[in-house]
Length: 245
Image: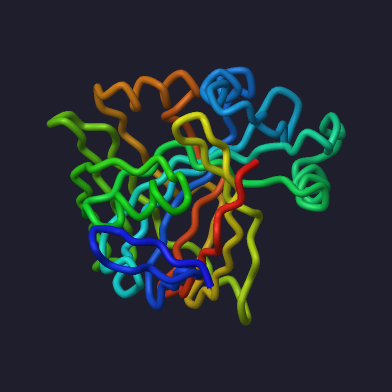
């Protein structure tokens, strides 16, 4: 059983999250712009439609877990594994299913958090690009909102509207997460057990600030109408040991 020493505390693998709430939105963005953003990682954005890549913005309230309680915001892209070959020119749903079969993953490009312990653990254990930021999560109404500020500057303000209930049973294994930090690319297996899932087409409003990350998102074509949005009232998660590629 792998163990990591973080700030004098031993973290045993796998890392477990016992309760969290998640909200987010998915966007179709320009594939050439997404590739430019991801160039540093050596990974390739998946084209889910000709000339279009998939970018997900999500915020999480980690209420109870091995890395304590904290808030997190993520910018991630669906990536195409090198062995998958070119994307088939089909519809969006068929392309996503084909990429899933080919082993597509989720590349975590930016991951601000508001607590120092998870910051160090995330970077040391998985190579996640965590950095400290001010995250204002407002989750007490059906409308979920996150305001992200860093270095005193607004990055973005994301509002997710309530959707329809989606039946989900048991534990799920999403596409592996990928990270790149200090020249090293890693693959991270994980699983989730969501409850209270809601989803809908569109359903998100986004306002960008003047931070460099906001400018990067604007170059992808945001703000724009979301492809879809989602909320998860409660979920457990398990994160496995990272594998260096």
